[in-house]
Length: 89
Image (cartoon, rainbow, N blue to C red; front, top):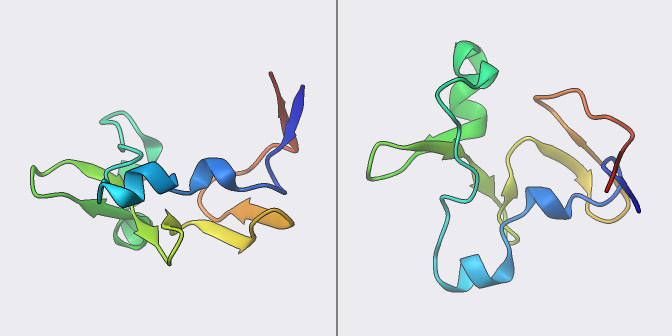
């Protein structure tokens, strides 16, 4: 099965179950992440929770990653990482 990572965008949105429980710490930013070295964009794409843990910032009604650009299910791209055409599972 092949997934088109520049079309769907579902992996970059907080699932409805999480939103119902007000769970927003969906994608943690690990200590070794290259994103932590990019201070210029760190505040734009990440947030720090009450426990001091950094995670990807979620925006909009579907709580999608702040770096996700485009229309879900049609054409999307990640503003912070080069996106491969697809992932095979």
